[in-house]
Image (cartoon, rainbow, N blue to C red; front, side, top):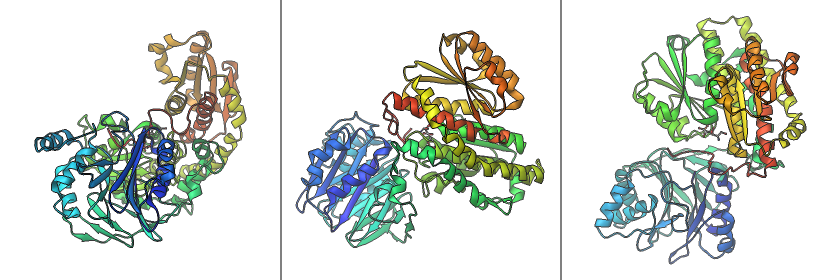
Length: 608
Ligand code: AGP
C-alpha cells in the first residue's frame, strides 16, 4: 500500500524523506516522489519504478534544497503506475502539494464539479482532487481549507500537505489510513508507519481519525475536525531500528521465520501467570464470556487461515459454535448477528480495509468485538471494543510468518479461557495444555534446525507447475497456509484441499510426479488421510508428508516425510506450518523471486 512521509526542521528535508520512504518500501509500491519547499517555490521530483530511480534523479535529494518536504511511495489504485500519476500532486498554481495514502471514493463527483469551475487535472488519480479541492477552499487559512475538504471527501486518507504561503508549516490529517507523527531533535516528521521515523526519534504520536496536525520546526499543534485545538500524548516506541532491519538474514521473511520462537513466547508469557490464563485485555467478565452463544472469526489471507484453525480449537474446547468468514464476504452478506454473538477480527497490520469494514459492520449492529492485532495503535486495534495484541514485533516481509504464529497463540489462549470459564475442560486439562503451549517455542526452534534439509528438498521443485496441499480438520487449515506461503512468493500454482474433497474434481489434475503435500497431525484422522495419500500416489503423485513424530506408518505410503514434535492436537498448526514456511521460502529463493516484496502484493491491503 502507499506510504507517506514528511519532514520540517533544521535539516535538509530531501535526504530524510528518501530515507523514510526506504523504510516504507515493504508496503509495496510502483512509483515514488518528493516535494520540497526551497524558500520560494515547492520543487517536485517523482518517477515510476523503485526508489532508486528517484534517488538517482535527485542526486540523493541534493537537487531539492529546503528544510520542509513531503514524500510518497505509490501502490496504484486509481490510474496506472506512471510519472504523472505518482505523488506528490499539485493544485493548478503549484502553491499546494499533497501526498495521500487511501482512496477518495467520491473523487469523480468532486472532480467533475471542480472541472465545471474551470479546474484542470493532469493525472488520473483520486489524490489530485484533494489538491484542487484544498485550492478551492483556501482563502489564506490552511486549517480552514483542510477541514472544509474533510467535510466534502468520502473514503480513506492519510494526507501530508504543504502550503507555499505557509513555508514554516507542514500539515497532516487522516481518516482510516494510518498516520503517525514523530518529534525529533530540531524537527518533526509524519509517516504512514513507525519504521520511517525510528532513525530520528522514538517519540511518536498516533493520529486518530479526523485529527489534524500542524508541524513546525519547534512545535506540534493538534486539532479536531472543528479546528478546535486538542491535546495528544506521545508513545515511546520500544523497537530498535535493527528490529526493523534484516539483522543479518538474507531476507526479512527468513529473519521473521526465525523470530517465531521469541514471538510465540512474547505473546504467550504475559497471559500465563501462576499457571493461570490471564487475558485482562479481553475486557469480559466470566458472566459475559458465558453469555456468548456464537463466535464469528473474520479476517483475510493468512489471518483467515488461523481463524479456520481457531474454529476447531474453540468448538473442540469451549463447545461454542464458531463461524469463520473471509472479511470481504462477511461485510456484504448481511450476516445474522445478535447480542449473544461475538466478533473476533484478526489482522497483523490492523489496517486491512475489508477486515476493518467487517469490524465496523458488526459494531454498528451492537455486537461485541475483539481485535487480534500486531500493530499497536492501528485502526482495528483502536476501533475494536477490546484488542488482544500479538507481540510479534514489526513484520516487514509481505508473506506473514511470525505474526501468523502469534495469532494462533492468541486464539489458543482465548479458546482455553472460554473453555475454562464455561467449565467444558478440567483444570487438569488446562494445566496440560499450558505445558504444551510453553514447549512450542522450543519445538519450533528444533524444526528450524532442519532448514538445510528443507532447502535441498525445495530445490527439487523450483520448476514445478502445480503443487497441492491436502489435510483434514486442523490439517486442512495448515494446508491452506502452506499453499498460500508457497504461491504468494514463488508464483507457482498451488491449491489446498480438504483431503476428502480431492476425489470430487481436483484429483484429475494429479499427474506423474505432481508434488502433493499431505498434512497428518490429527491422529484420529490418520487412517482417512492415508487412504487419500494412496489415492494420489496411485495417480502418480510424489507425496510429501508432514506428520507427528512416531507416526512411522506414513513412511509406507509417503515418498518424503517431515516429522514434527508431539504436542496437543489443537496446537499442531504452530509446528507443522514451520517446514511449510521454509519450503515456500526456499522454492521462491531457488527461483530467484523477490521474496520480501512479491509481485502484485502489498504488506497491508488498506483498499478494497
Ligand atoms: C499472507 O502471507 C499475506 N501477506 C496476506 O494474506 C495477509 O495475511 C492478509 O492480507 C491479511 O493481512 P492482515 O493480517 O494485515 O490483515
